[in-house]
Amino acid sequence: GSVRWVEETGWDTNTPEPLEEPWDITVPDMISMHTLHVNASDNFEQWTHEEFNFIIGSVPGNLTGYVTDQNTGNPIENANITLSQDSEIVSYVLTAADGSYMFTGIEPGVYSLSVNAPGYIETSIDGLLITPGLVTTENIELTGYGNVHVTVYDSSIPPRLIGEGITLELVDESTGTVVATGTTDTASEYMFNNVVPGAYTVNASFGAMTGTYGIFPVLPGRTRDVNIIIS
Image (spheres, rainbow, N blue to C red):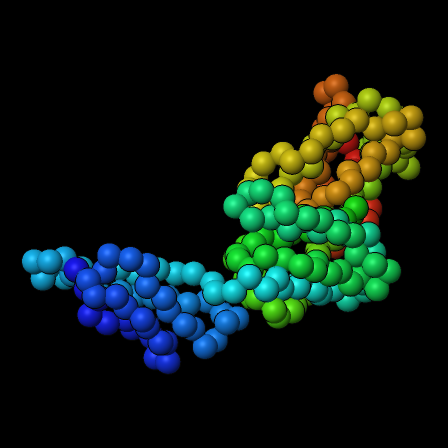
């Protein structure tokens, strides 16, 4: 058969006639994604169209950026950044004191990043294109978890601390679901750690006594104090 045309301005084709051996295409821009459209026919002039997406060149690229706190803008040190391709881990690095990171010598292609750090919600970035010979910059902001510190009192006047063994439920108001549970210590207190920022309610129960506190906000990187009276 034969090739009628190749659709890409500036490409130089050397197409054998008939098409019984490999043929070459010279691409002037060696560091970008290309789409090749080919119209070809068999000996009976039955034309077909094929489309190929690919990256030309084997020169590796680099990936760099900064990881910061979304709320304060402060750099996050020792954040763990994992670079993956097609669900396979390619490499990982830790951020420096200024929040910076860099991957070098990456084969061109499309990648994913996952970023996690203590006290922060894990963040993922998909569809990250690494281009041959170029440096790709991807700055990342992480949202911090909040905490909820609960203290439970009885309904006497003045209220008194009850002590340990009080059952607590942390309810996410956006879904109405219980996202965490706990029981108070001897000081009648409990801390819910690593709470996703949002609106919440706390339910408390101790035998026949119950109480509820809410609705209240949990903010990134902040601890919310909640005092509940049960009766």
